[in-house]
Image: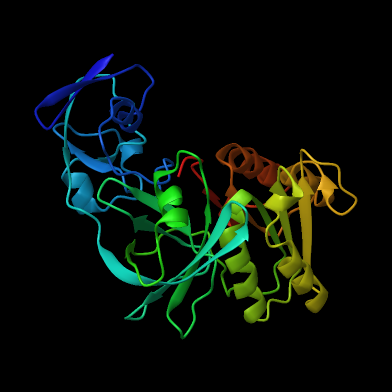
Amino acid sequence: MSILKYREREYSCHSGETILDAMLRQKVDLSYGCKQGICQACMLRSNITPPDYTQNNLTTDQRSKNCFLACQWQPEEDVCIDPVESQSFVNARVICKSLLSQDVLRLTLEFQEPFEFHAGQFVNLKKSEQVIRSYSIASTPNHSNTVEFHIQLFNNGQFSQWAFNELVLGDVLPVSEPKGNCVYSIKGTDKNLLLIGTGTGLAPLFGIVIDALEHGHSGHIHLFHGSYNSDGLYLNAQLTELSEKYGNFSYTGCVTREKSDVFFRGRANDKAFLQYPDLKGWRTYLCGNPEMVKVSQKQAFLNGALCSDIFSDAFVLNQ
């Protein structure tokens, strides 16, 4: 066990426990988002040089200041840690709230100034300095300067409960700059695309599909969406309509805990890789449950996809 010194107090950190998990366990309010080392919402600074693996995607300046990602570091010695300067946020106004299903909210924000992003990227949304959460963008860049998110409701979700029950039209919400490389590329519009998502991991994949179709993508596009039951396939009607409109787009809904004559019974990634055993030359996009993403990254590679053609975003399940 190591000791964490933070703001003149000491906290325990068990062997194999990350600094973030240790602090949250002891009721310290730290901001965090994805818990995957991507969003950088949990960045802190230490009195010693952090391990390289805790500084992935940080700038040279941040590295030189001993900044690290608290969700990644499992310290084996005592560490003094301090907060760092906050991220850069711009304000956006809530212009639409609607339910896509019983527990998935469509939230649309409008910016006063142009907000540049790529379909499939994610941002951090701030409720307070302690409650910052990562959400993928479900829309494509547009002239109306709006951005859409799909927010899943969790019983203990500090952000999702607030967004569902308290956030109202006209409220202002701070939004970070967009991040992530799980995006559509206009290079290679003839490449086949395989997209696999679970839950609201569908959000960025939906944006990528629309972006590809709007750019006249000529390769085949197949989206597999998995959920426990059919209610979780919350864009089924819209995606089915798209598959009927575009000859090169296919959609397969998959359920694991429900018998269905409409949807495939089983996991979305299992169905996808059985249907496409040869992914040589394909681009693969994986979003949703972290375990599904991890397993599917390996399987996509074994099925012939290049590492450079496998894009992913894993979603933390407690929002």
